[in-house]
Length: 575
Ligand code: DGT
Ligand code: CA
Ligand code: CA
Ligand code: ZN
View (cartoon, rainbow, N blue to C red):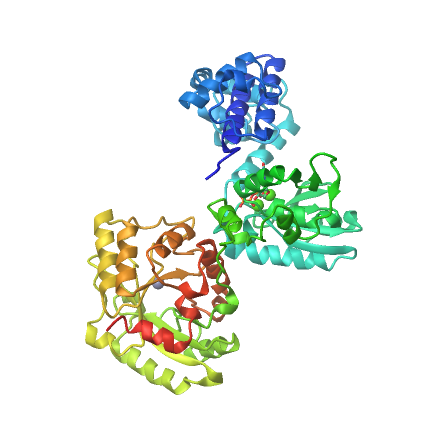
């Protein structure tokens, strides 16, 4: 696979760091600028510089003899002696200080020298303690800016999950679409790619009255502060602390702008290369003829990809993990969509920890137009839920009476707990009376890898277990995935006819996309489930579908897109 320009970005970053370190250690401005310029030239250089020697590097604009030598050393050995030397002289914390908005490298070094400050947290404490008073060049206004910058940086380090970002983005887009003069408005970035965590929200719009749109944006009730304000781009921070960027682009560049700002960056690097091969220049401003610089109309993304000789690539695939090659070969997968979903196979009621009674959950499922729906309250081993066989049996009778409401076929299931040995709550004869069993890890998350692997493999081989629920048990931002030899688990699932869940709860999204793709290569089937504990959760299925798409799944791979008879045959597990 071609990996052009990755090397260039890497080298550019190294030179930028070198320039920062030169500044921190008090070198002359002109020298710093030389490295910054070289970094930009190499970053923008169209050919991959991997394997270049010093002579070849010197052909790149702004790359002189000494920089060429350093870069050649880096390319051949993976390190740069001079850079390592400088790194050794500057504490890592001081480098972190330079990332605070408004604080440059020189003043960061001054703070370190005079006050011993070596982290943004220490700087914040020092300012609050009044330790900067009397330090030349640090007045009250500067202090205020620094405190603000530290807070911003702290927020920027925090990513949110889709359940936070998506509703916010949709509200913002809807509000802007209603503004007079706004013609198009949509979100792009990692959110459009349905990544499991979102750094900031990127909104694009076209408008014949951009200023009015920017005013409306800055004045939205969700906005707590305006970070940057302009006619082309305005950035705000919301009350939840999330950054939202609004860019207003010309109508005839909408497609190019959507393509650029949807990313991912790695995908863009590839499309830019392909553009160059077609004698085109692709940028956030549009598609241009590389020779005449003439702007080529690119109103839609389809048009942009077509100009590059590619079919339109779904945003959820745009990560440069093979989608370009697949597109070139005409082998893009036909991704599963929310419309393909015929039912939900993992849901709860107030019999255990759900919030709504059975009848209400069923009515809500029917309203979604599902053909079938499984109720899977918690098994007895999750003690605080106090499930008993009597309660489960009574629920089954209630459910059978509701079966067929509005054409909805109901399945009576249970969510079992996989114990450390891979055993589940009830014996096979009891489980035989359920239409399907989900089995999940709800405890003992820290077992050694071999033990966790055995645990999951045994659960998959249990002839009564149909779906492994939230297989990695991760909670985004709160609990890491359990450690297993996933290849063994996937093999066991494929052989035994056990589906892996893609739990659509936005703080789970479990399995994650990379593991989905790996599992699929073993022939594993998947169930995209809401794990709803309330009516409102049923709609989370969209996040699970986004994740399934990021795992390159088609409807064929997802058992709850199948007709009921095919599904029930699968649930028999070769028995
Ligand atoms: P995030 O916000 O961290 O969740 O991830 P993204 O992908 O939304 O990244 P963001 O917000 O920094 O930028 C939005 C898109 O803009 C990104 O996916 C690709 C494009 N983009 C941003 N910076 C660059 C760049 O330096 N080069 C290229 N080729 N594209 C970029
Ligand atoms: Ca973003
Ligand atoms: Ca952004
Ligand atoms: Zn669970």
